[in-house]
Length: 217
Image (cartoon, rainbow, N blue to C red; front, side, top):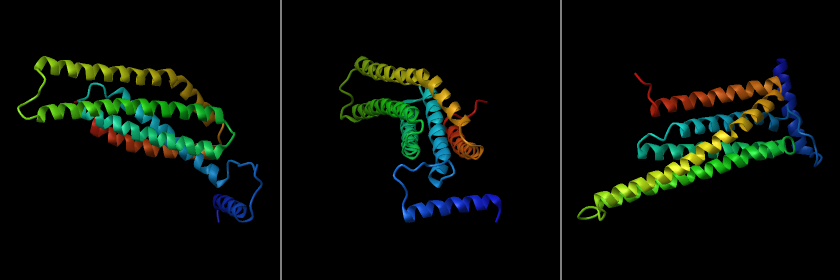
């Protein structure tokens, strides 16, 4: 059995003993505890999902309506994953850095909810236009009225989009500082787990990105 295997075996044994015989209510969870071992991977999942969501948001404005709707919904899924990971980290880490973790999660929830508003608006626009086209005898709106409706939808989306980008830009320095400080304070093993998981997610997202934003010739 290697030293690494022995370390994992001891951790598993210690955790099973706590589950079997109980533990004090206010016990300290150390970084080599099995539960805490999940934190670097959860952090990587949260951070990579957020980074990719922000990347999609910054590059979707000039895409066709149907593609924008698809990406808004993809961003919502990514932010849901990011929020879910953040909530799990808060539960595991208990009081350690709770204020910073709470801030991060409140920001992610706020961003997700604003993106949901943009998605709902674009979805309604799509349904509205489709229903107008399918009406018997053609649209009830004149060409100028249709143009006005389209402009109103677009301006409303632009207003929400600007709020999204402003929110991201305002919080970017705080998010960067928080992540850098947190990664400096974790062990070498935890940092390796974080980087490995982050790279795995990044690879998946980049492959997805190639299908959305094909390279320019």
